[in-house]
Length: 61
Image 1 (cartoon, helix red, strand yellow):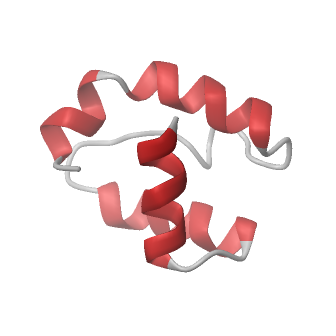
Image 2: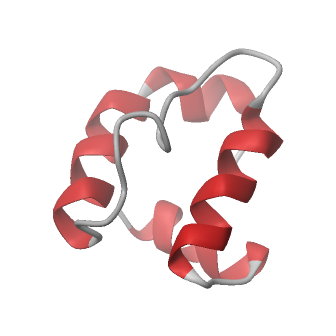
Image 3: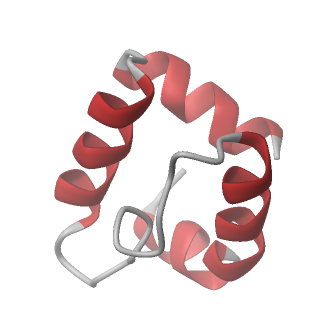
């Protein structure tokens, strides 16, 4: 998923991630242009998932 696709529907995906993983906060899921990798890294660490697992989770939403 590229940055444009991710930013376009991020609010919807963010809500679904928060429902599925209650430990994620708004700060963890804050999408800032140019900081996508940093945000994904925070989520990855908090959930204990690999980068590939995280991408599969997001794509499945």
